[in-house]
Image 1: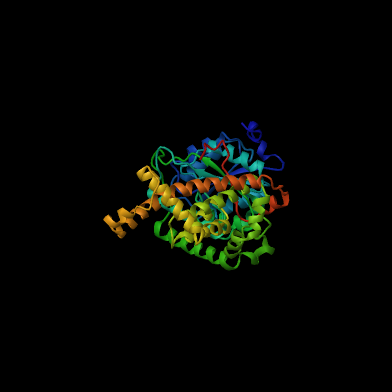
Image 2: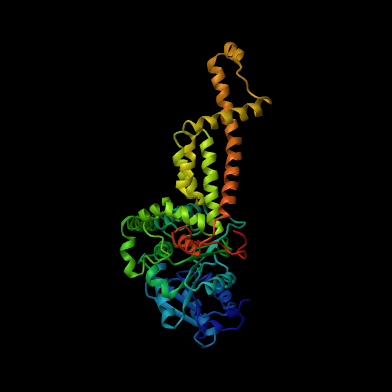
Length: 442
């Protein structure tokens, strides 16, 4: 157990980090009781927001309050009518701030989340108090519904387009929010859009995101209840993402005075694109930390491999996709891949045909004029094309590895400059901190 869990109530005493659980609930009377019982084992104060429930939820919460000690560690807020999850969260955030807490742990009350996971999320938040900590739902023995998987993948991709942050689970409801950053993170989205929107705004604001893998329970006793309205909430999500994309295209930098646009901010789409292809970033990768140097070496190796492969017509697009996918430098990849043009390109073709012939026939290729006379030019060209394709796979692999190794050796002799490391960290490349080892290796 970590320090802030070792003693009951230690998180509610004055200090630099004070955690409280905010649990929004709407018509989860059959599951919320068990969730609250499990939450009690964390020794954290709990604020439950009853968002206009019409089932037995109110009775369950009344019993929960009556069974607990009168020390303020159990708190219930109520909405007369259902306002949606975003509104319930904001009510809980407001109550937490009024009571002097610094961080809010959110959890769904449908039984999907395991409250025992909260400890690791709080440990991550305590180590980086300004960060947004997100619990990434693992794929366990029971797979999530297909619609949920598709929605999660689409949402993750849209968030990346909007703010440049690669996220694994943009829709997870188990998180730790730093309350002092909420003014920058809350963009006014309603219902389920709030939890996705805050990630894009975190990228714009320079608020770091930490991902911690958590267990997700898709088969809960009595069946899992969801209040997601497919058509209505999908329309809201489309409208929200359209607004975020438009803002990312034109207006992100304009908010610098209001908090958005700090030194670690990812910035607008045009700004990120310019930094992505900038030669200055290439220089910083060469003089920065080892991770940047490895990516630069990989960029050169990838460019050599692409120069060898017969992918004419789509090579540049493929180079850009590989650069985005593996965080390579597109300028290095595309520049090196352009070696495929004459006259050097003929050497790659000859080497590939030679390697392909040896692999297919076990001997060095000759002029084979007799074969041309007997088989015809077109059959010979077909054979050479096959040898070229087969051989290019081998030559591309060898040249890619050799190029990577040579550049790594050369860069190891370049002195590292800490200012370039800091600049590289703030250029929008790394908006999400990696999952800790304790997070089941997701």
